[in-house]
Image (tube, rainbow, N blue to C red):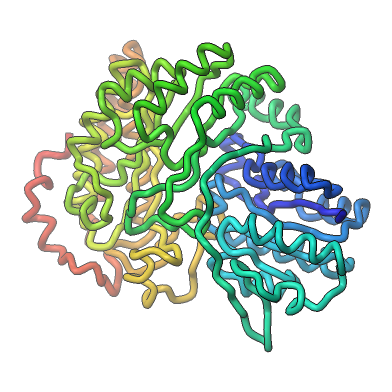
Length: 500
């Protein structure tokens, strides 16, 4: 059997925004793969980049372990890996090169490697796995075990779902769709320093959170959402299996909170109801946070989530403009967002909104509609970003000719427009800051909401909105290809009366 060093390359220290948030989670998908490799009999060691100081930590472990194979398997449940941040790609390619220089065979897998395998292969990876890549990986390992030094072409002969370098270029063999999601092997939690994670969380927030996943993928088809790992499938575990894992986590590691990393948690109310029953029976309930869609939150669903222990739900609201939601192929209505927020709030579940600025064709009237949505819905929290063109999406195809020098962000606070939208990046950053302040002011407690300081903050925020709106034409892109002339702002029925 092989000596395998399993790694990922998301370094919290390389992402200042996330470092300041101090909400690190262990790399769930990477730990699942490590557990499967260990169950198959391989000698597995692990490098966790999340809390490492830098690639030097990896180099020291690499020299100590001296593995036959180094597997870079990114955490597919981490949305920041899906965004393909430049600093993390650079770190991974550096680590790949060091592994090759030490004489190890190297395999890479992840969203960025699937979308752009060339940098990883040229850094020294023998093979890049496409998508989730687990079946291909398990087929490759016996071949490596038989002849570790064999030429790459012979190694991968007859296999699909991978990419290699051939004749100076990239040679790809596409794979089949992923199979149903049954997590037979629990993540290898023993390979990470749980207490170090606990210390970071408790110091910053006073509680400790761990991550789980009850499903993979999403069957909806938003125009901007990339799905390089699981495609358009929604693969769900049984509710009893998920309840058993939560119970195990509670007994072994005693987290105060769980973050479900699913794109959509539960999906069907019957699944959530069965999970609630199973977790009550096991005594393993832990307060948890989920991601969901507004159109899934019926009154029954809100009640079932409450019964299951859900404390917070994040909704991909994206925009308060129905025109933009339709352009995104989001499939939800503004009214549904308001209704979902009310239903969840009625049962005591906190609600966060994900907001996306700068989609194609968005103009000032649409941005003000988003502000109005936050005024009306009053979510407990908000996350604001700008539209991010990822390979494989309809959105990417629409803007790819506009991607000049920059194709991905360097870190999650970059917020740089990579295509020629209506406004410049500085304008969207200003809108982001104002929306965050707006939600913060909405959520002041009753005592502070009546204070002189609070009223002054509201007046200041209103004035800043007025100044930005008055100058919005100065922030328009030099080559605005959105198709929305400035004159549409004045004509917009939602433009007037919003400076409240």
